[in-house]
Length: 401
Image 1 (cartoon, rainbow, N blue to C red):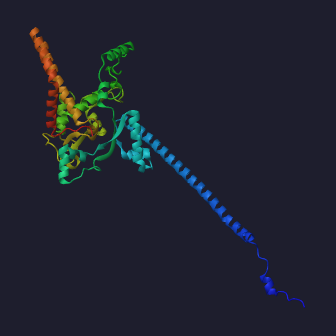
Image 2 (cartoon, rainbow, N blue to C red):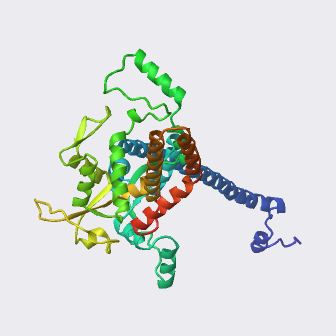
Image 3 (spheres, rainbow, N blue to C red):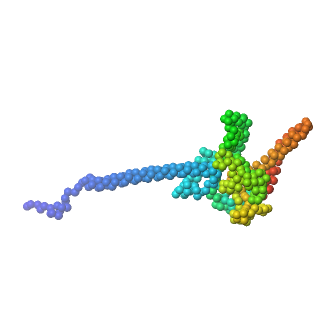
C-alpha cells in the first residue's frame, strides 16, 4: 500500500528557506547606499562651507581695501583744504570723499589719522563749538569740574564738537622751536648763495638761517598781524569792540586804508586791512559778533564793552572775539607767553640803550652788573607779566584744545 505524501499545504510550508547569510546580504546592501549618500552630502556641505569662508574673506578684503582708499582720499582732501586754510566740514567729507558710504566715517577717519601722523606728522582736530567754548571760559579748570559735580551736570560731549576740522602738527614744540632757531653759519651760507645767484628781487624768498623756510610757506607778515590782534583781544578781556580794535591797529600803522604785504605764495601782493580781517573770519581765526546777540556769543560775556562802532550799512555795533581755530591751533597760553617775552625783551633793550648813552668805565661796569641781575630775574619778570595778562583776560588761560 502506497504511503500517503504530504499535502499541498504542507509542501508549501516546507519550501526551502534562504540561509542566514543569504537573508542578511540584501539588508547589508540596502544600508550601504544611504551611508554613501550621507558621505557625499557631508562632502558637499564641507565644500559649501569652504566656499562661504573664502567668499566672506574676499568680501572683507575688498571692504578693507575700500576703507584704505577712502582714507587716502580723505588725507589728500585735508591737505588741499589746509593749504588754503579752509575749514574742513564733515558734510564736505561725506559729500566729496565718502559719497554714498557716509556710515563708514569713523572707520575712514581713524585710518586717515594714522596715515597723517605717520607720513606728515599732522592730525585732524575737531574744533569746539562756540557755545561750549564760551561756557568753559566762564569757569575754567578745576573750578569748572567742581561746579559740574556740585550741580550734577555732566560734561557736554556731544555739544562740544562743531563737526568742523583743521589739520594741526603733532611735532613736539621743542622740535619746532629748534627748527625755527637762526643758525649764524647757515644764515651766512644762504646770503652768499643769494648773492651769487643775483637774487636781489624783492619777490625772492628771504633768508632766515633756519631749517623752516618761512618765506616759502606761511605769510609771515600776515601771521604777525594776526598774533598781535589776538594778543590785543586777549589782554582786553577776551573781547573788543570794533572801534577799539581799529584804534589799536591805527597806532600800529594799519589804518583802514592800509594794506598788509603778502609773499610770492599769495595771489595778491597785498591785502587791505578790511579784506584781511574778513579772511581771518572765514578761516576761523576771528569771530565778529553783533552786540546784544547773546545766542551767538554763547551767553554772558566776561566784560562790558567800553565803546561801540556803528556799521553804516546795518546800523549795528560789533565785537571781536577769538575764533575756534585760534583756540585749537594757537592757544591762549602761547599768546600770553608771546606778549610776556616781547615786553621783557623790550625792557632789556631799553636798559641796554640807556647804558650805551652813559660815559666812563664806571657806567660800563654798572651796565654789566645790571645785565647779570636782569638775566637772573628774567624768569621772574616773565612770570609776573604772564600773570598780569591772565588777570586782564579775566580767568585761567587755556592751552590748545
